[in-house]
Image (cartoon, rainbow, N blue to C red; front, side):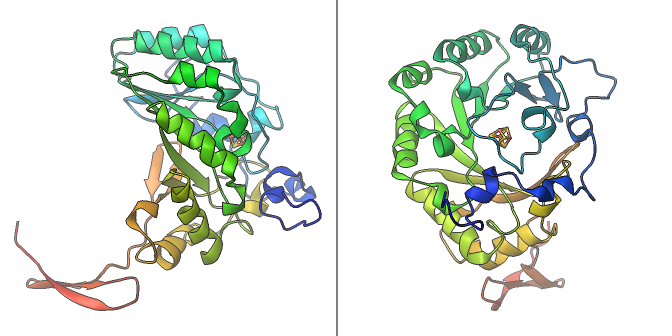
Length: 309
Ligand code: SF4
């Protein structure tokens, strides 16, 4: 980050602000609501569930850096909400739930754990017959790329029928360095794909130039843009939030047609009932029995036949 620039987009993500004291729209106990922790299904604290076939498995509340905009702020930054991160209890629950095929290991940041602990988690999950894929959510390729050490590569590498996928979080092109490029290359050489889940942040990436530069630069270091999340209504982060429509407008004005199709993330709101996509909907301008009128990113229109089912 730039030390002397209060508007530095990297600095604003990590240096606390008095604005965090203002909380007009944030929901108290946000994670309880978001992760359905008050429902009838009894689950260990480490298991968050919004879907039938996949869960988030929280294994630590420690991170490589603490993001001021974090939706899990109550647990990892403010620490008002205490969760039991009991790995054995979580593994037991996953073993007993045969409908779960996909486990997202999250935190905090799971790559803060030792190589041995990460190895143990992967081995144990691969022993469960119904697990078909393992995912890690980690910011380390961006904020601590040196964590991708030869030891960790050894843990992650090798062919296995249960693959490992990684999603990281990068919110501005300035966060991407040559160290990031090397870390991502090392992960890919282990057979691990790396995607990005950005958060739409006011004054950081909510203008067309920054938004486009971020998604283009991600591809230059082999990270595939995956999601852009609306900044969630966790307490104390009102100052980072844009309007809901903003993300779809940015996809329309900075990405779709303006740059390669590989740089297209899906814009979503992550709610207690799962992710809701909110992509721009300007394409179909008109429709009649004979044809559609379609509009492109430049506002040009064309006709397309309307075929009966
Ligand atoms: S790394 Fe992830 S969990 Fe940790 S503070 Fe940042 S957003 Fe939150």
